[in-house]
Image 1 (spheres, one colour):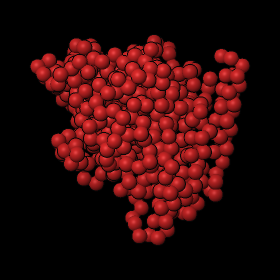
Image 2 (spheres, one colour):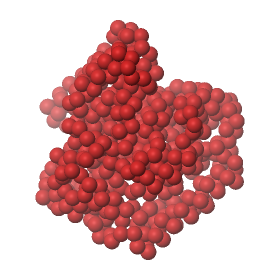
Image 3 (cartoon, helix red, strand yellow):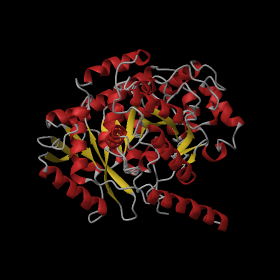
Image 4 (spheres, one colour):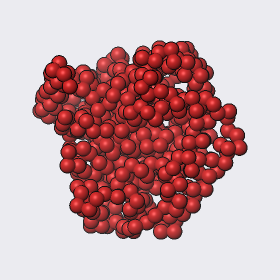
Length: 513
């Protein structure tokens, strides 16, 4: 690293640390650092905080930290106006002010907004495109009174352009950096959403997951992330990979914050009718906040999948997880150890499971459909995007990263016999794998200590919740994941919240080099 680069890095790090220190001091009785939704709403009611002041704080955080972390692609030029509107509504009392009213939320850059923000999936190819309407989840957020703060960086095209690119890089947003250890992997593809939540650059954020894209960055950045059952949240207006696997979920500093966002965004959407109608039966009467119970581990049967706890004896992770298991037992959980999912090695191999074959075809079809519906766009098909990248090889770093996944997807011809066979294979692996394991052992959930389980959750459309679990020797975070069958969010929330409250692992980032 050259002298100027080292100087720039030092200034950025100093600015980040200074801001971290300053933000811990109360402002009119309110501490912004690590603020929760409940704490923010209490401050609103007491008059010690306004939505405008809160948005100003997060915009200051973004201005100071983004040159270092590359978590945010762009901020909403209308965020302050939206905050002022929320303040007026609160003062007038004319509108019921729910949990998300006046709360600034950052959206992953593949979630469409019909406003002055771009929606580009991190790519220059979609810069300037116009969406005909807000994404379904955004419409629900606006209805709840949330302030759309901006768009978060992400792995370009949700890490489906090339396997040679970093899982946390995009042409528009650059390389996302882990706020705990700057040289550590922040993971993707909901990279910026996790980084921003961890570094107090937004109250809460939204991410998306096809296979690991909420669970992994949440794990690596010490935040709580919820990957909902596929169809529980609408995918309408989201730049897609696979309608069969895509899901939209919240990321926050606490399980409670993530759950409050989840409660606001679930439900039927006519523009994603098949999936959201099928999953609507899973939405509990009274919502999800009722499951934020400190005794939520009591009586729960939890299977330990040791294949995902393969840490060396004596390592920090190995010791920490054994302590966590003891804590769960003390809180009344019944742990069933050394369980194995049938055909796990096949599930984890995208070629053998059929996931690769299916995703390539599904992506081309879904992306072409999404692009064709845009009000205006420089590209209208996957073929157009490939051609754009070839024409803008420097900006999109094509020589370095290529676009082999795009090219493979472009060569597909729809859902034919091979794709149907692959989808049937995944359905069989899921029913004979996680579902059978949970049924035979009468499990409420399975628990894993690394992100390898995401493929299991992905191909079955199953939910999972990642919660901060600890920090390695170098200070890099790691999480724990509670997973279950479709519609098991209520139980997973009970367990994840109770675990979080019993352990209180999370701490603010340190910005170590």
